[in-house]
Image: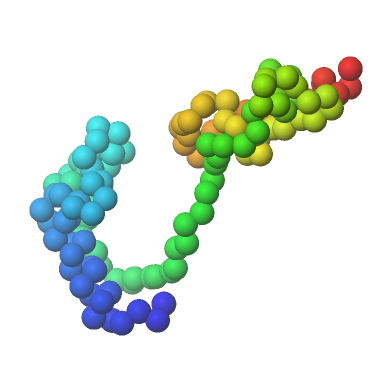
Length: 129
């Protein structure tokens, strides 16, 4: 990780303080009912426990995207629509290359799979006609 050991220790000490106090000052974990539902009810904060027992492992984490809140707009036949709303003949889209059928939301992992398969099927059926 090429991380100075004292910096790692400071990070662990800070996190453990959050766990002991029950308040995550950085990411606010455990504040929502949804967080608490899946957490450990025996802890002061059901989403935080102290980091104390070895072995410990570290890895670099890089941000990425798993969904889209953009892309081309399609109609109910999976045809790509022009800016004015008219479909482009013979041009289809499905999955993450098209705008989400859920608007500007992303309910969670896997949420693009169902619409991707459905609109892929719809596009294939329409093409076959």
